[in-house]
Image 1: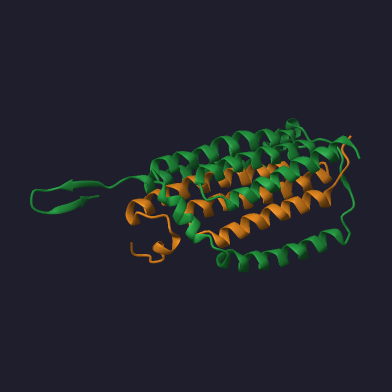
Image 2: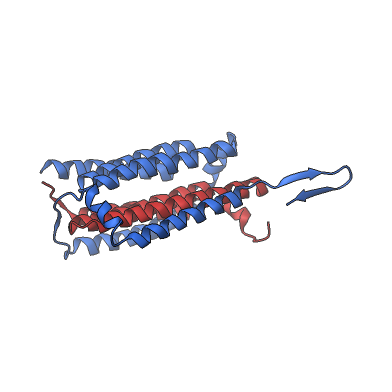
Length: 178
Length: 102
């Protein structure tokens, strides 16, 4: 067994175990920390598969920016200790056993299809950041501009939705000032 | 140098996607559902990267970058919505937000 395959299996197993821990945690911060572990393991998988630029983006954007954004919101919500117990009361076996069985059946079907053959070929050699950049600013230029528009729409939407309505308390009547 | 059969990568992507889907189905907390959607998007990106590395093309990584962009925009709007829901309803339960009129 060569080294790349060994690293792939190890980090893939770490990613799966960390993701299982994410979906079984009651505490939100613990789940997010396991999510960071899962993203870092997947970055190692990307690197072994020959995508070093995607591995760097996985660490910077997913494990860096998105998880930190969710942590900021959890800090703003200021949840108390009873949120954990409420989460525990929501996640009973009668809730998760039905979807678990159904999704396991679907997973078994996907495993059968993938292992039945027809997928010859290995990950042969790395595709570096140079090729990605050339392709990104060549044939995919219009898609880059469109994703810039998407980010702009996301920024404006988040600003509009996150704005708190100013509450003006009059002496006699209470009204919300839009 | 590399000799990773691509079906292993696709199986890993499938397992991660299934875990995210189970989590979306069983959770009632809306922040956990958003985290699970992130897991599923990440698994889809992994499948793109595996396919791109099989044919030694940059297109798989480019699709991963677009998925990344979409996930960032989605999580910012989703978190703003979560803050607004928590502000209005004082809970993170998705069942409490089942009416359009808050």
